[in-house]
Length: 289
Image (cartoon, rainbow, N blue to C red; front, side, top):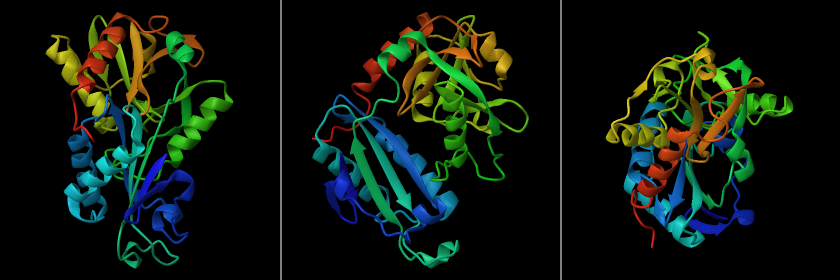
């Protein structure tokens, strides 16, 4: 693991932040999860554009601007040196006094972590993830808009814990209206009659970069691909179900709340999109060396 922090790159075990950093104290900050495929930082400019929007929404000034942050990511990836990796780019409100007042923090802090990651084992992906509907609900946009990737992930963490304690692999989060938002740390897709569907941001889904790419690739291949409101019924009725995310990749789903859903393992559309995405990722993003 390599970590860029306070202007230098260090080993992961050496990285430290002050206890009065408001990202640590209050979850006051934003982040991006980015993948490195084949020596390229996947759709880096799209990730940085989303980070810039989140910064404006939260009133966090990006130190040095987007271009400086871009160089931080590339330099840390270069230091890690592997062609396949995961990047966690964090911008916290910075160090301040006790008290939630953001104006106590004079300067935001940038941290960039690059390491290997594999959320799901190959055997698990071959049979499909077991999802469990969480008792928690995704907060509405007037509380904290889900399009902002904030450091406050308590709802997702508790939903994931609930799912794992129940013997499932991943949690399914609904919104206050009972519509599907997303999984704890990934977007959800269903395939029905050859059409690809995923919940819209207005239902609580993050506008994931992997999600966007899959919609673009499916449409380019002539497939019907849309954002629409989905419920648990749509998962149960689907021909195929899968999750997508920078960390998760493309992960087939095999069951929901103990009931089998879709095809056992990755179905034909899911397999096609896995192959298309892998080929696209070979060229989609800047090289870091």
